[in-house]
Length: 353
Ligand code: 5AD
Image (tube, rainbow, N blue to C red):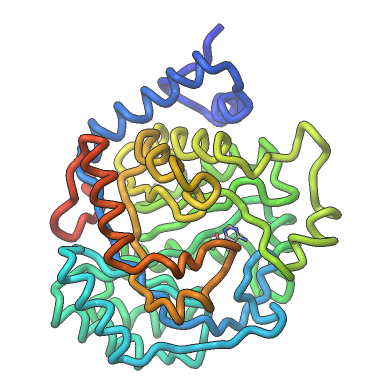
């Protein structure tokens, strides 16, 4: 019997994730695209990504800029450098700027508040922050300064796996969910996400992750494949130790990532979902387009200056230093046009029915 596409529950999500029949999957892709069109429309929102610091105090075992990653030149962008990028984003017509970075106490609460106020004043754009786990006082001050949204992926809903891939992290996955909910209380739109195919992620885990997106009614959900990053523990012995049995381990491939995106669209119909950079790295020719045709409605072109982008390689290939911001934006705009979609105007926040 074909799998359900209506009233999807957790066991059905798991069964869809494991589905390999092409005709069945065509029905999933089609339904995800219909739900996307009905609930968030034709617009693809462009968010200008500015990677403001590659310093990080965390030891996330998958991440190329984690504190413990071998010799790496570290940088923090100045106010002027950040503003130059934000102005460029404004000139491209972007309705949102995303300030992302490692968890870096050297980027102080006061500095971020100042940056948020200045960008807001100069560009009028919505501002998304993605700066790790910070104190509630700072988060509140940033919100008061004008920040609109906050991204903090929970990475996996399995508490044991979460602990293994985040050693030295004071805090559990429940703490991370609690922080997301506190940020929502502060008035932020909240975003989260996971990587597909991290060692130790089983079909049950990924189904639970997708179910958690729905349970927590997330406003934004980023899903990309796990790409092993040189010199990180998860790319080496730790990954081998954690890998689930064959048949149980979720592969870190494009098909599984696309299934996760499509299913997320079905269970969170009006959420904002980016077609992620990690997906486009796995499949440079079609990854981005495939994401947009199977549930995604956001692209985040990178505005970080090339000399810093080079140093923000959280996974291999991410830096794309040969492409200028103009080329990245041109590529995104032509893709959106070819797909018969439109460029989103305005802040592009979540439109709840
Ligand atoms: N492969 C894919 N995604 C990664 N991230 C970090 N490291 C990797 C990797 N090796 C993702 C995490 C993080 C986001 C900023 O990038 O999910 O939250």
